[in-house]
Length: 251
Image (cartoon, rainbow, N blue to C red; front, side, top):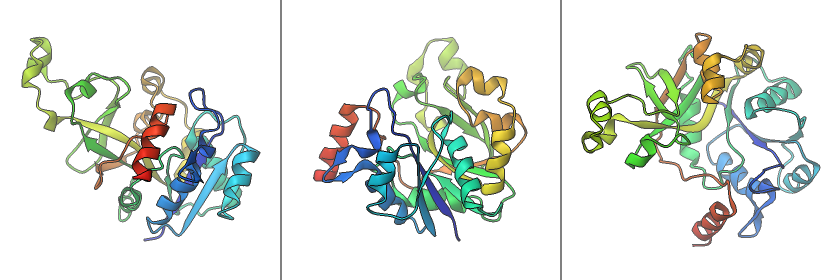
């Protein structure tokens, strides 16, 4: 199985400016993510950034770094520019790895890529079991439901599936966490579909939920999904997250 990893690395961040360059045990965050991605067995790992400082830092440990525009609205749009710049063949499997996950599990990268082997689906992603009841009601924890053939049915910030008896009777004690899964933000695509995706009209569901993957389902395409082999650690969004990751890796 051959696949390529692309790591979008935006410099700007409202909560943690310059996040890709944050020092973690003597290395910038983006280097930790890059090295974890290399361990997945990818044939190539590419960093895609919109800032010269990130480009310069990444160039110290890899030649596979490209500059992209700074006006993209999503990581998928940045991915499409990379596909075009590198002229990747339409059937190339491309895995989008977030640049703020220095505790990335490399097993999950190869797992999501493998979901597209022997499948007609143009896109794949992963999920994990919800372990805390509060996450069912947390809009920042995106829930997902799937069918018997490992196809995603829907993603939502709302509690899905809706447990009628528990919700209507306000009896949350009978909620079974085994029925709930959260989405993990790692995606595999066929390169040709990435170009198709950015040409698709944004869907009403996507705009309502602020979830770009709903554009794919709305336009009738399949998204393969299965439970991640390794439950992922949270990424870095804040200074507190960064301190937690430093403590983990230092230990």
